[in-house]
Each structure stands twice: as structure tokens, then as C-alpha cells.
Image (cartoon, rainbow, N blue to C red):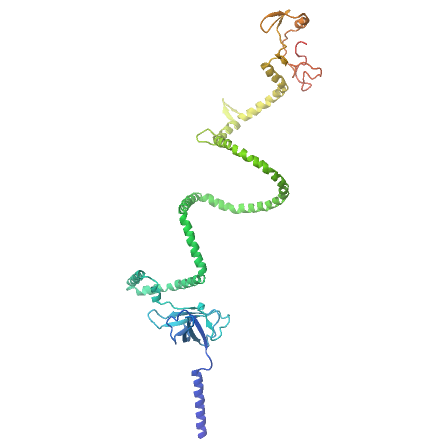
Length: 457
């Protein structure tokens, strides 16, 4: 009996010890210290949650030497240990309470390195809650009064429509989540954001200084856009042809590469010549300056105000001239060839005649020369071999009648006028020098009379 009682007492003692161990703890718990700017009204015993699930509690809150809050939290074994990359956010369960804060853990990747127990998460990985009074204290009294009026206006607008308002607020969650990520990125890149704002301000300042030019650009852009819109069909056609053009351009550029390789020797050989061209170009500069009036006159010749007074109008008239000179016309009841065709036929017919008269060009030139200055020259000036003889007398330039000297009388009497001398050979107006070159026959069968020579010795 006593042995049974002793055994029962021993079992009871063992059970009490086991319960004490379970209640007190079977070993050290996992805890992490969070550093943050302020505790945001956290108190010991507040919950620690992960995605809304309770995973631990706030066990201690202390103040560090640099004025930060150090919050010690414990995490259940099911969620311990935490992984690197874990962040902590102090949140509010509602806006109406005071001590209703909790710590929301956002876990890192499960493949990340474990965070040892009693580790300290720096303030960069924690985020304090923002109270409404802190938000409204950033505004001046006038803004706070305006915000109060806005809130009252929202209240009046949602009165008797609370169900619809609650349904509408469901759509704010995606917007607020995206806004949170946006501002988190902006806060992480605050240096770049500050530089962007400064550069944007400088850009706006520069644009404001050039506002008249910008206004002109906008006006001209509108004109260009209108012009492009009026040519939308042509633009569409140009875009349709662009791929083929680009393919041909690619082939052209490939061939051009080979051409440029072939031009390398030419470029090397041209370098000395280019150096020698420098003095010439320097001399051409004054010529170019002096040529400016000529080019201005040429520009006025090409085009000037008015009708029918410049080369542009002349070129515009060329189609009508071309039709009149190259197309057959109906004239005098018959279809006749164009002007150019008739002119070509006339030139073909005139070619043999021009070929016949061509050897007589020196004779014609000599006739014009003798017509202006009769005779030849000696030391006393011009004189002529021509003279009018009547029997044994001749006329003087003054109109007097004088006898012919006896030594010349036979020659004068032997000379006389001849008719029918109209088939002269080229050069027959000159006397033969003894070389047999006068008179001149271009071909042996040339139609001219070699016996027609100057009268007299």
C-alpha cells in the first residue's frame, strides 16, 4: 500500500515537473532586436505578425545611446529563424485607438542566409508608423482648416451612402500598394530624385527664357503637322516603299564599301595635288568676291518678278516650242513635217553647196579686205594696180587725161575686159608664184576653170 502511494506521488511529481518545463520553457526562445527612429507608441506585449498571422510578441523596448528605439521581439519556433532581407513595419490596428500598434514582419527569401538569434536589424530595415497628428502637424493652420472642410464634405457626400462608399474603398488597396512601392523606390533613390528635380528646374528656367522661340516652334510644328496631315496618302505610300528602299540602300552601301577601298590609292595619289591646290584656292578667294555682282545679275537673269522676263519663263515656254518644232503640223490643207525635220533636210541639201564654197573662203575674206582697203601697201602707203586706159591715154585719180608712157603702151593696149569669168578656181585672184599652187583645186575633178587668172603680167 505504501509502495503504491510512493509510486503515485512520484508520478505526480514527474508530471508537475514536466508541466513546469513546458510552461516555463524548454530552452531559449528566438528573439531579434529592431532599431527604429521611434517606437510609435508600441508597448510590451504588442503582437508580431506575418501576413496577418501571430508569430510572436514585443518583449522589451529600450532607448539606445544615439536616441533610437530598440525593440526586442520574440518569434515562435514555426517562423524562426528569420532570413536576411526581412523588414519590419510598425502598423496601427485602427486609427481610433492609442495602444493598438503591432509589428508587421515582411520575410526575406527563404533561400537567404539565416539571421542568428539576438541579432540587431538596423533602422534601414524598419519603418515606424505615422500618426495622423504627425501628418496634420506638417500643414499650416489654413491648410488644416481646408482639410477639415474637405473631410466634412466627404462625410456629407457619403451620408446615407455608406454601403456604396465602403464598396468604393475596396479599390483603393491596389492604388495604395503601388503608391507605397513607388515612394519606397523614390526614397531609396533620393539622390537621383533630387538631381532630377534640380535639372528639371534648370530646364524649365531655360525654356522660360526662350519662351518666344518655343512659341514659334509650337506654331511652326502645328503648320508642319497640318501639312503632313494633308499629305497622308503620300506619306503612306512613302512608308510602303521604305523597306524596298532600305534593301537597295543596304546593297548600295555594301558596294560602296568596295568602291571606297578602290578609291584609297586615288586618295593617296591626290594628297600632293591637294597641297598644291592651296595657293590656287587662296587666289580664287578674291575672284569669288569679285564675282558676286556677276552671280547676282545671273540670279536676276534666271528669275525676276514679272512675266516673260527670265530664264525660268523661257524654260516654261520650251514645251510649246518643242511641240512646234518636233511634231507634224497641218498647214495649207496638208500634213507637213516639223520645223526641225525640215531644217535637217535643208541642211542635208545645203551640205554639198557649203562644201563647194568652203575652199573659196580665202577669196571671200580677201574680197572683204580689198573692199575696205583697195590695193597693197608699200613704204608710201596703199596703192592700186587698177587703172582705166583709153587708147594711148589713161585717167588720173584727179580725173585728168594723160598719155600712157611708151614703155607700157603695148601692155595697156594688150589688156582688156573679158566676160564669162564666173567659174574661177579657189585662189585664182592671186598670181602664180611659180610653185604651181595657184589656182587651187581641192580635188582633181573639182568643177572650176584653171585658165581664169588675173589679167595682165
